[in-house]
Length: 175
Image (cartoon, rainbow, N blue to C red; front, top):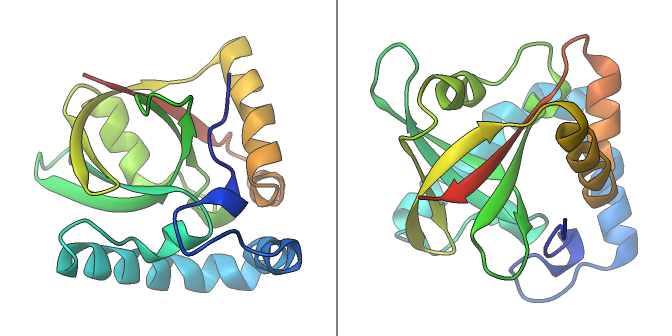
């Protein structure tokens, strides 16, 4: 499995210097970041993404990112969530999502929505709307992807160490 572009090659003005990247990884691994980031990062991403009609996603300056729209598991109403992702391969036809929830105790709501409605998800990827099918990864496939995810973004290890739940991993494929 090819993880696609890494954090330093995320869309933006150019590669982030290694020192800056390490600093961001260190900060994002902290409990303080886990308390603040869920209230700031998604709101900023959603607002800028909407205002630029899908062309700009601020968090994608450090990590590749997409905006997931999937009906709510109970309400059925569209839920829009900006997320970091791991694109797979050059064809831009599959993406990995990590349900880390910034290392907080509960699974993020978007994971329950994907479990309930895996055929109804749509992503905004680099300004394009793409219908996708979601699949929860399990077993050996999950373990292989988890190893790639840790190499891709090491703070995931700190997130997993803080929680008792097993972080959910999903593969999104074009429909």
